[in-house]
Length: 145
Image (tube, rainbow, N blue to C red; front, side):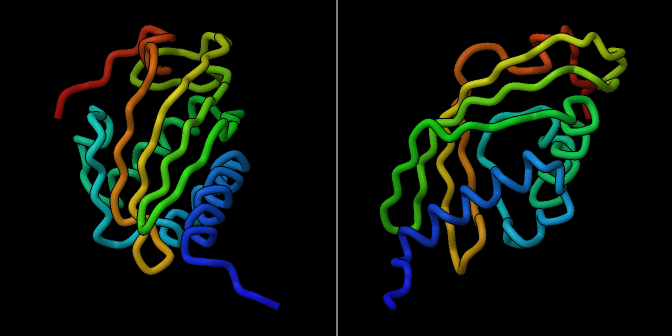
C-alpha cells in the first residue's frame, strides 16, 4: 500500500482543519498550526494578538458569535509546501461580538487562502477575502489595541 505524497498529505491537513473548525473543535488548533505560526492576512482581530495565540483568539471570538459556521472547499491546489484553497463559508450571527448583540442574520464569506505547511503543521497563512467580511455584514466594529 503506497503512502500519500507530501502534497496529498498537506491537502488532507487542510480538509481535516475545516472539518474540525466546522465542528467548533477549537481545541485542535495546536495540532494544525505550528508554535511559530505567522499570519500575513490583514485582520484587526489577529493584530490584537499575533501568532498562534492570535489565531486562537480570533477563532474563539468568531465561533462564539457564529457557532454554526460551515466551510465549503470549492477548489484546492497544492504544490511543494503550499496549499491554495478557495473557500466559501456561511454562518448565523447567534452570539455577541464586539458589543453587537445576536442579530440572527445569515452571513456569507468567500476567500482564497494560501497555507504554507511545514512538518505537517501550518506555518504561514495569507487570506484574500472577497466581498464584505462577517463583521461588516452584521455592523460590528473591531476595537483598536
